[in-house]
Structure formats: structure tokens, C-alpha cells
Amino acid sequence: MHRALKRRTTLVVGVAVALTMFSACTPAEAPKPIATPGVEPTGTVELWHFFTDREAKALDDTLARFKAKYPKVTLTVKGGQDDAKVTTAIGAGTGPDVAISYSTDIVGKFCAAGAWVDLNPYLQRDGVDLTAIPEVARSYTEFRGKRCAMPFLADAYGFYFNKAMFAEAGLTEAPKTLAELSDMAKKLTKRKPDGTIERAGFLPLFGFYENSPSHFAPMAGAKWLNADGTSAIGADPAWKALLTWQKELVDWYGYDKLEKFRASLGDEWSADNAFHKGKIAMAVDGEWRMAFLKDQAPEVQFGVAPLPVLYASHAGAGYISGNVIGVSRTARNPEAAWALIKFLTTETDSIVELSNGIRNVPTTTAALTSPQLHVDPAFQVFLDIFANPNSGTTPPSAIGPGYQDTLSEFLMAWQSGSKKDLAAGLADVDTRVNKMIELAG
Image (cartoon, rainbow, N blue to C red; front, top):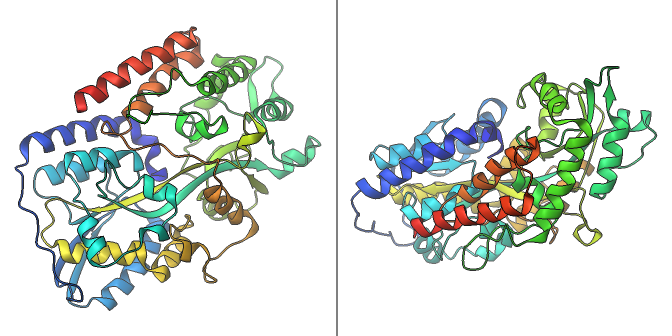
């Protein structure tokens, strides 16, 4: 998920179109036969994933063990893929047997449209204990009783701060509340005489790096959907409180000054990342940022903590997401495809090896507690966020991330000041989201 967030806006449209075409044009297929337990899989399996560079190598190392364990399976791997390409290929009947997605938000659509098959028959046949997977990861890999995905490592979003800048400002620990975050952001900000921002204590604009409403929602315990799947955004006072706080900090900086400053910053995934370069003192980011800092900016002294929250009762919270993996409906060798997924998502050694290499959070209890898992104090913070009951995720929906993107569209206008009525804007988000859900069926 995280490596591709910067291109998500355009991909959402592409995936939505691809899924519509898939649903309309792909004929229903007879269920694939399920082999009896213990039958060794054979044949060719094609895996598509989105990883690149260091992370792709870590995956290749683990896949080498799969090849050794299943010598009768020929595995081909294609990296650098995205959800739109995968879904379009499946709709055309040319998709991979197995695909790894960076977006848990797509699970609802993949399940509803049938792009990925229901894994329950395989899980039940092989006696896989799903309770070994923490509840939050189970929740974002199924939709309406259909488990069309398994969790492929998880992401926990927390808070990064520059220790040297904190020491310079007389600060000793990360902010615990949003009020403290605002105070520290102002103290850590540096401006030129004309007001131009040289360094932002915290850049509060939505659309900057990992600043999204989904990642901020746990700060206030904000709710996305009601039990019936309709939008809960407009009626939840937590959204109003969170967005009022955000707009007040934007206004303190000056929206135009923030936009000018943001335009000067480097790419999120490069060595020119603003946190790496000391252009921002604090940031919301995932656990993987630690590996990027070690690789691209080892001189930066940083600390990590849970997200600052609106109320003390939400302490320890963060946003939980992750990568997901599934078998394509058009898979030519579903039994071998399932063997690959089972190897990557249920075998402790594989999960731990992947976590140590990619530096994401393991998604089984056994892997989380394995003595082979590389855990330093900073990584432990993210493991604690993952286990914290105040942490939240985005629920699956038949419209995929459509409810999030509808809110994000309003928030661009809200933070710029072009739309000033927060209550009316959130109510309109509800109306638009509910119409989308109604059309999706």
C-alpha cells in the first residue's frame, strides 16, 4: 500500500473502471476443483507484486525457499505492478495466478466483483486457524463473508520526530495530544522575515505524503461506515473535531505559504524526503520509514511514537493497514497458487523472514512473538500500535476506497478555504457516498 500511495488518486479511477469492465464482460466460471489434502501441487504459477529495489529482493529471498519446498511448481514473478494493471489483466483473462496488492481498500471491490476467488474452501480443507491472525488484519481481508484475500504483512502508522530539533527547542518527548502537536509545531517552525516557511514543525495539509483522512482518523477515533455499510462521516462529531483542529493549524501557517513550501519539497520515496532533509520536524508515517531512513539518511536522529490524539482515551492509537494477496479468478493453477499464498501468509518462518527484510509488521501471533523477529525499541513502538485497541483501519466496502476519496475531495476545498461550512460539506459527503453504495448494490 504505502509504496504506491503517491499515485493512488489516478489508480482509483483506473481500478474502478477495470472492475466495472470485469464484472460486465467476464463470464461466470465453474468453481475450480479442490484437491484433497496432502496432494503436492505442480505446474506453473505467476505472481505479480508492486515491490521494487530492496523490498523486491527481500521477497525474492523468501520465494527461493518456496521454490525449494515445492520443486514441481514453476514460479514466475513480475514486480512493479499496480492494482489497475492487475484488475485489467484479470478482466481480459490474462492476469496472474496470484497478486499482491498494496491497498486493503480494494478488497471489498475485489471480493464483490469476483476478481479474486473465495479462499474459504482452501482454508477449511487445510485446517488453517484464522484466529492466529489478529482481528484487525482479518477484518480487512474479507467482505460480506467472502475471504478473497490473506494479509501479506501489515503496516502500522505512527508519529516520527527529529530528536535534534526537539533538543534545540527544549522538547523532550513526542506530543501526546493534538493540542500539544499544534504547540510543538509552532515552536519548531522557522520562517524568513517575509513569512516564507523554511522549516515546518508539522505540515498539516491533506495530500502531503502520508497525510490522508484515513491515517488521521484514529487521532480522534473517527468512524467511516455504519453497520449497514452507509456513510457515518457526517454524523460523527469526531470528524468535525479533527478537521477543525487541522484547519486551525493550516490557518496559523497560512494556506498559500504551506502550498508554496510543499511545492519545494522532495519526493516522498527518495532520499530528498522532507523529513530526511530536515525540512519538517514531525510527520505521520509507517513503520517502513525506519528502513528508508537507515538506507537514505542514516545521520538523522529520530524518535517514534503513537499518533497524537484528541482525547486521552485514544492514547496509543495508530492507523493499521497492510498488503493483501489473493488468487485471481482466472488462475490457471489455483491449487499451486493457494500453496504459494499459504506459504507466504501462514508459515511463521516465511512471515518473519519477510518482516525482517521488508520491515513491515507480521500478521500472525506466532510471527509477532517469534524470537527470530528483529525487534528494536523503535520497531516495538509499531508492534504496540498494531496491538492497541484504539488503533483503527478503513473498513472494506463494495465501492472500495470511494468513501475515502469522496471525503478527500471535500477536504482539499476545506483546507484551502474555498468551502467554509464543515457540517454541510460532511453531510454532502454522506449523500454522495451513500449514492455510490446504492449503485454498487
